[in-house]
Length: 220
Image 1 (spheres, rainbow, N blue to C red):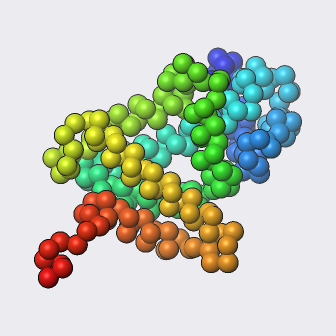
Image 2: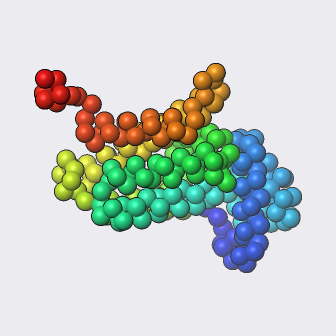
């Protein structure tokens, strides 16, 4: 995780370093990221970088963690606004998230295979047993716990918080898959547009909320 020297920096220098990180992480996927480019853009000595972070991976997951946490905070606000309605909140959240991921200022970072990099973080030896305390994961877990507590479980077929978390993970898997499918489609002869990806998620979310099987009444 970032070292104490980073957190002791003045806000202007932190912001300059984060802008440099954004530029470089937008340019290339993590394996191709250059620390030299980051320090040149941030106008700091290379040695100073290693006083703030262990390496580029350390900076990457700190930066990505701030993005993910901001998005989860937005979802938490939506859940509170809808009085705990998970499915209405997720429908609105997807509209926000897909535009943020596809068209927002960090779109190129998400496009640079964030899913693969996140999986790398999950399996990385660097996090080990202390992974739960790493800011990237700790912030996610804390916000997810608050989301869990804010959902109105009386509207759902869940009996406890464990089942609720499994449902939330399932919905997020659909969300990530849908956005990933969009990015994949951009490399084909039939690229999806924003309306396509929103319609795809809406259809799948409706299946989760109401079931994919037709009722006896619908079958006649």
